[in-house]
Image 1 (cartoon, rainbow, N blue to C red):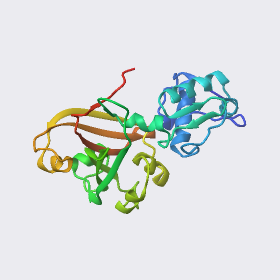
Image 2 (cartoon, rainbow, N blue to C red):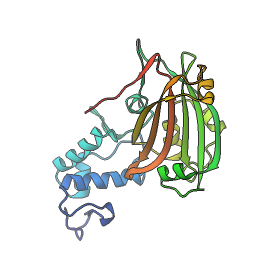
Image 3 (spheres, one colour):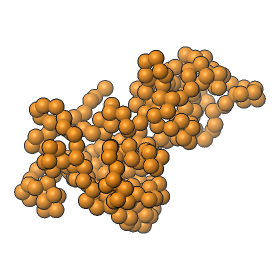
Image 4 (cartoon, rainbow, N blue to C red):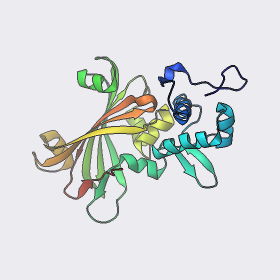
Length: 255
């Protein structure tokens, strides 16, 4: 890509795991991801201009633009006309709604009302440890919350987070915070959720879950098992959501 002996050159580190024959823009993309992962640019902040990045990496502006375009398509960066390119943040509605998939059968979506039912530190069992790439018995933060729309309980979420990344996360902090949960993780703990993988299945709700949703036991529910990742594909959240879908559907976009 460049001659690393030249002043100002930034070569691609071997730790990125890129093949020597990777396209140049992919190497620049990897370096940008590394800077995002290391916190060089915080969520909501502008990154340097394409001209500045081209000078930094000693490549053409077109190569930088192609790398930035891919990161924008992946929702890791956001272009703002006339203002520049910014690190995506969960305080932006268009980023937030990537992870909130429930929509009403009719009418406009209503604001979600979140209630924290439980928050405590526990030891990871085998399933949680495997999903979060921890060891069994490692500390995790376990959260249960209820989401309602227009006062109607609709979703029960069971959330598990690595204890080492979320020191100081308490029920009090969660209860006082107003805004998207991922926004809290980003602002208070420096953890950005950048993508997620989900598995969906229909289940019969057990007595505990249906009791929270105020429906009869064994009512059909949609269960969504999600693992969310931060940069470098590191898993940082395991979530199981139970959705009441008589008035809602789970939306998705296939590109």
